[in-house]
Length: 193
Image (tube, rainbow, N blue to C red; front, side, top):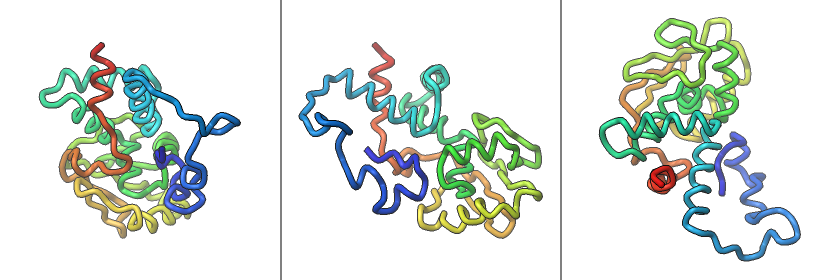
């Protein structure tokens, strides 16, 4: 399944999933019957790898989402989208979540004028995420900002391209989290056992 982990490469014909849509090896094209547990585990692993989290981090996000009011699965995805590295990716400063995580760790971003180098920092409504003055000449980020229009900008984010800053307008909405489409109910069922 296409997880868009390789940045722009996943939007072209060079994507490995487009070229060969089966597992590697001699028996890769064999038919495999997957159990309910296997389906739930695969969905959890898919979400975990998409956001680049370890098992303990993901479990902590699930516990936090379970304690919140509302639907647990949607709360989980909203918490994951509110991470600073995810917001940097959504605003278009990076072409992949891994690159966004690296840029945040290197201290290229300010949140409300304060340098933040923690990728798991939870961004709130009204927060302004901007690129530091010294980092604005980095060609990789400028190329990524040019490519954000191909990928699309979610409605909960407002981007000021000229000032290298983005504002979080609202909390992420489940209906607009399109790439890739997750079945968060399977994750809730897996952890509820």
